[in-house]
Image (cartoon, rainbow, N blue to C red; front, side):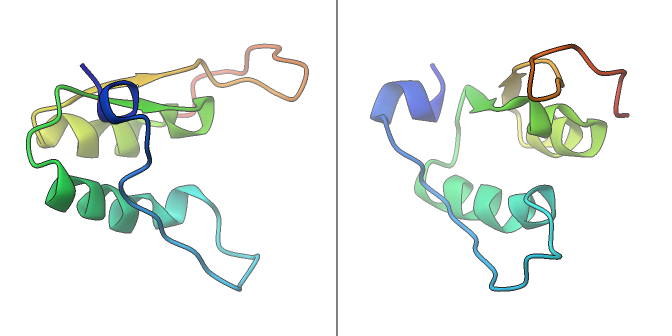
Length: 83
């Protein structure tokens, strides 16, 4: 079971006052914090923004299964593969 489903919390967080830094740029730091708190998660849950290949690879390399919504725009219309 994924960390967010089992514990109902976010176990890692990364923030920046620089709005030019994208949300996915801060993912590795937050994910490492999550692994420090929960070293062997079965799965990692995320929004469609986390469906890009480099993030799913990072999650998979840590023996977890990435689960995310498909990439979409604000009207939930599917977008092409972000690779």
